[in-house]
Image (cartoon, rainbow, N blue to C red; front, side):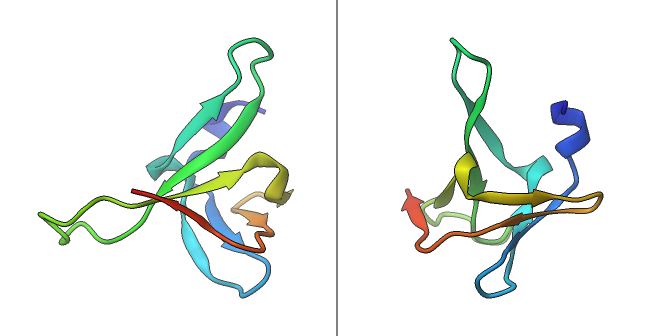
Length: 83
């Protein structure tokens, strides 16, 4: 699968049905040796939160359960925030 095919898909948490964000607004951590995706870094907050500290949620690729035509279903027991 190409990154362009992931772009625009919504990320949904299976545990609570929460919409976490969109892949097009996120960054990917890729293992340079294998070329495999290790994590998705998803920004949190709104565009209007100027001056606030930027926070991110790191979603390990192993948390991805299903990639559909419009969304990616993940299962995360706990969210690890970076910021």
